[in-house]
Image (cartoon, rainbow, N blue to C red; front, top):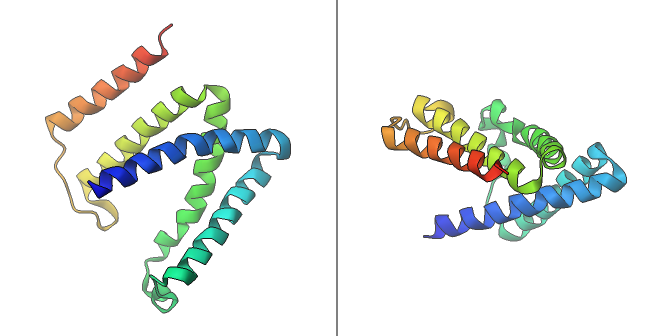
Length: 142
């Protein structure tokens, strides 16, 4: 239940963040917006880290260096999400983003990539994706 609540909160924040980022970028530009988004996120994360102390800087050296690129991926995510919201509209852009995210995650699970437990790709998962894609197509019909 807690996981579902976190997922709902994340979904709400993703949709609102995209709109906030577009509005900011209209005034200051894409790359400054991206810097502000990640800079403010860095500051908040650092403060929470100092308050909660839930990690260890000493263990950073033992991490697969590939996993340190998450922040770089975040830059691409923010930039492309902003561009899609501008080109499409917020609801349609986020719907496509969520389907792409689900397809990517299914691929990671199906192949057991990046240390994720391998999960067989079943008919119900494929049907679910097809229904989501059909739903977005119906959503976009005028």
